[in-house]
Image (cartoon, rainbow, N blue to C red; front, side, top):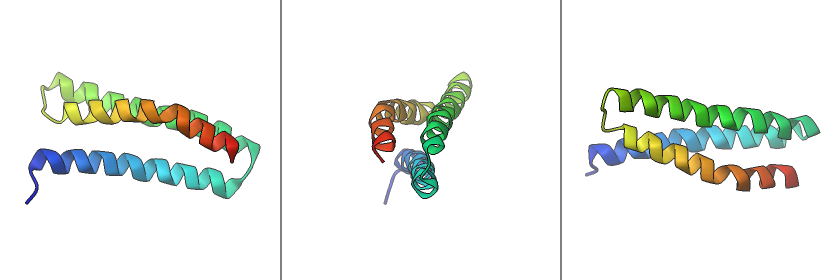
Length: 89
């Protein structure tokens, strides 16, 4: 039905999307000025965690390293639009 690399990539993107969604919902729920600052600290931590996983998998020459490289790039590309979204709310 689905290939193994596709499922691994899908799960990596899904877990990151769920974490970002949870983070945004927490920012919306608290509705204070500090929540945007907390977002600006927690989101880069998520990017750094993805980078650590990527470099760890790259060290062991794993095929999944490409998936975490792509998720890290996607998170970096989404950072500025999400910051504008959080600041507007």
